[in-house]
Image (cartoon, rainbow, N blue to C red):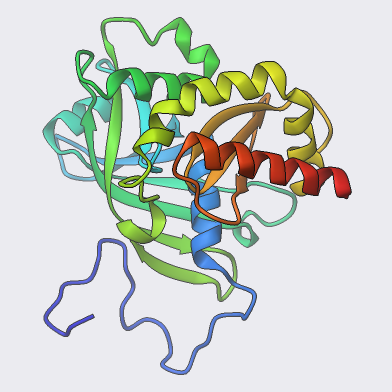
Length: 264
């Protein structure tokens, strides 16, 4: 970073000792993308429209095909009123587990939230991806005061536990889909096909490749870098070993992963 370049929002320049080295097994991009894609609920921080103070609230979260966070909020909510005045916000996405909460990784994503118009070309895809992750939200997603909002990410800060922190820019945490138009267009059909005809493969992915309990796992998202699985309130991310950008390579990748899972 050049001396005259302002730091990214949320970055911590000058706070880390010069000779500090991250643990050799720390893979910040992998951890950040996993948190972004697999976390279903986050803390949304907006700027209070009356005072400018930070205002935190709890929201359900999904991601667009490139990883941009999606939320569904009502005009009657304080956070929505704040966003209508100033769209700048952050989302805290945290992994939960046993013991001290601070030993588990968490990701703060910063950017600007904007509503997705009901008549926009993106709305059907955003709606499908959000409701696949949160099917119960369909009960109120059609109400007149509710709308989907999408974050234009500018940066992210990862805290992966003690001595495991990283400042990330948007390109590092998001997924490039500029060369994956065919995959994006085929995503809905591919998800439907996997859930209808390849339930066994989904169970193998979750159980054998990700170490999850056996159960009725569903596919809820596909992008060039991975597959999103969900069972009840539990979501998982299966990263692909190589990028896929079209339906043909996707079929080959899913077959390859199924064979690996069966071999285990």
